[in-house]
Length: 498
Image (tube, rainbow, N blue to C red; front, side, top):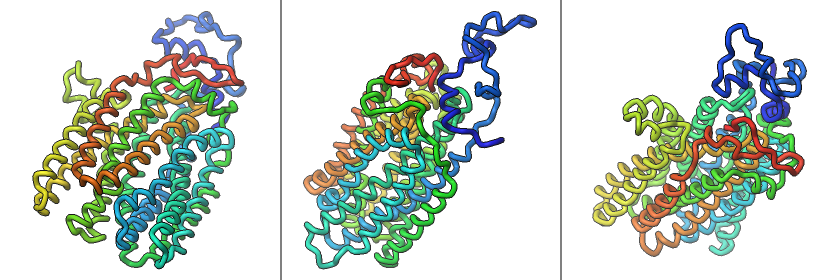
């Protein structure tokens, strides 16, 4: 099958009138045998395939662009997570506190907010490839700065220097992630959106990314044990190779919008579900980072006395389990849970619906509260604390992975093809806001009250996320709610936008 033009595909999907048979099939009306389907055609004229009409409904989507960007995204992720672990463990060995570490990583999240907000709009104008390459260049700058970190610098200078370096890394991460998330929508359909393929692509990419991220934590912990400078050298080589491969294989014009989008236009035309989902995302990832990013590794090293290797291995295993469950989310919901539920409850295992978010949040809140209480009760007993922490955090990982996978599917399902990058950018801007708030707050809460207090605050954030998620609508029932921005005019969609 020849490689299709993503720009023309997007325009066709949004503007080409359906044939009579397609209209009847979409509306659930069968054509009587021997009848002339043109009798019911209301369109101005029939669009022939050689004139740019929609391809046959059974045509297979071209996934070459998806594989190219997904490979870049995964290669970048292993290096980025390894870099984060190297910096964290190296600075902890230099006696930096949890608050100081949180401040160093704050610019990573803060610049992620700005990058997501405006990066999506830029991608809609110039395509995904330029921003993908810019992200990799930004990562090269971040790693280069770390080579020149001085041993004799004051804590103030070191904190500021690391924060700037991590800021470049945050820009890189969100530019690359935005490209990876957006390409799932562009690759999941030929004519109208295919929710099953879309869910499969999103779940695969999100789950694989987090499994690779876990592997990156392990690689980072192993490399920093080898040496700080050798570790950075390995990551620099990986990033440069990824840049060269992306320059060669990622399509040049992928993701360009057929309309000129502005932030005001996107926000004005954005359906309510995207705003609600973004708010839920803020509290979901804020809840996780209230204990995961800074307090947990500091607790494992400082309180339980784990080695670098053991700390990195545990964090890697946690994220890999989390990623594996994300990749399997469609199968677990549709084939494992749904058949075991009564018909009236089957919606809570529908992989294309926001309904499963509610039971997942109930599990998350329950696990977090129980873990916080048990940690308080087992304080001073390292063995009991270790067993409780490991078991409950892996249960948390499974439920959190299901909720996160549904979020990742819903944002692209709610978004129109023509502005998917812009909507994904705004959504991940909310994600970065949650991570920033969680990371900053975690340092102060941990120093003041400990890990169990971080978990109590996390439980509160999860309650809010669950309440917001409870009012989300099914993507296939939205109808004309989503509007496409075209020449400054809001044009209601007449086809389901997925």
